[in-house]
Image (cartoon, rainbow, N blue to C red; front, side):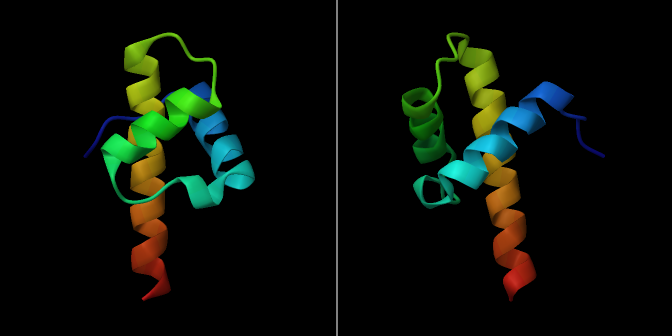
Length: 66
């Protein structure tokens, strides 16, 4: 079992995915840069958690489409 993400991280990530879905892909490094560019998050750990959750969601969506 994995870690449970905080609700505010999921909310921010879902809002970013709704508005800028084309900006994100399966690559964590690219998603990390996109989160940095699209938000005003100053904390590196929070940015990485948001990018990691977005990466997980995008990968899950890709496997569901198959």
